[in-house]
Amino acid sequence: MSAPETPAEIFKRALAHAARALAEQSELEVTFGSDGPKLVGGVLTLPHPSRDTSGPESITLRGQADRLALRLANHNEGVHAKLRPADSRAAEVFEAVEQARV
Image (cartoon, rainbow, N blue to C red; front, side, top):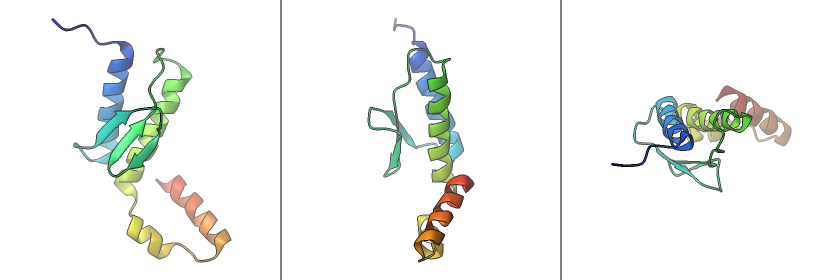
């Protein structure tokens, strides 16, 4: 018989499922490590959750996962590069609006 899952393991599993659903990619690889949050090559890496999964760190972690999953679902790098303004100030605004959009 296997040991019961810890609250952190349950939270990780739920977070991974939610990220896959938001990204609309059932095969999205979700890992946990000290180098997250990041999205590289179709792999979503998130920081390890704290032991207290009801604390504010967990809310932040969920927000990071949602942000990256939504970016994966709604961002098209080719279109973004094509529409990005050449002027540096305009490009900064463009990037800020894109971050708010996705």
